[in-house]
Image: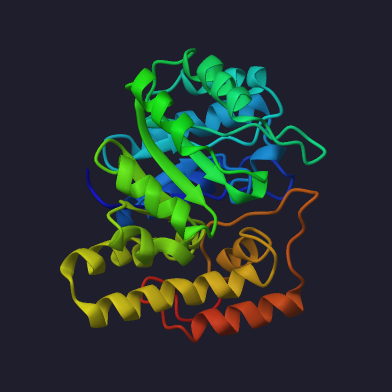
Length: 303
C-alpha cells in the first residue's frame, strides 16, 4: 500500500451562500495537480453540516469528474446521531464512482458514549448496506476510541474495509492500530501533528486541512519521508506545521482559510453560519504570517 497525504477539501460558496461550482472545480484542480488525495464534504473543512443533500450530491459528482483516476477521491460525510443517517449518506455516496466512503462512529448526544457492543452493531448495520470501499475512523472529539477488538472483527467480516484514520493524541492506541492492521488496510492520522509518527511506525500517511492552502507541501512531506533525506523532511514538515499553527489559533480550518485563499487570489469563497470568517484585522496578520513562509506554490503578494 502506498503512502499518501489527503486533504479535507473546503467547499467554496459564493456571495449568496450557494455552492460556487467554478471555484470548486478550480480548487479541486489545484489539489489534483499536487497529487494529494481528497475527502469531500467533511464536517470541518468542508462545512458538511451546512450542506443540503442536493449540494453534497452535486459536489460528489463534480469531484469524480475532476479527480477520479488521477488522485484518490473519497466522501467524508459528517458525524451521525444514528445508523439511519449514515445509511442515507452511503446511499447518496453510492450514486458516484468514488474510491472510498468514510463511515463515522455515532455521536449520540449529551456526551453519551456507545458500548463496544453497540458500536459493533452500529457499524455492521451501516457497512452491510454498501458495496463501496469503506474507511473507518476513531476521533477523540467523539469521546471514545473504536476498540481494537471491534475493528479487527469488522475487518474480518467486511473485506471492503480499506482504510482507517485516527484523530487523537494517544500514541499507544495509534501504534497498536498500525502494528496490527497496517498490512491489511491503510492507516492515516487526522491532522498533521502525528504525521511523522504515523509514517515512522509503519502507517501510510496523514490527512488535514492545510493542503487547501498548500497541497504541494502536504504531498512533499510524503515524498521527503520516502527519500530518507532528514534535512528535507525537517524543512518540509516544519513548513506544514507552520501553516497548521497559523490556522489553529483561529479555531478551525475555514474561518481563516477561506479569507486567506481569497486574499491570495485563490478559490476560497464565503463561510456559512454558524461559522464566521475572521475579521479584516485578523486576516492581515494571517496573510502576513503566511507570506513570510515563502511557500513556493503561493502568490508572493495579496491580490
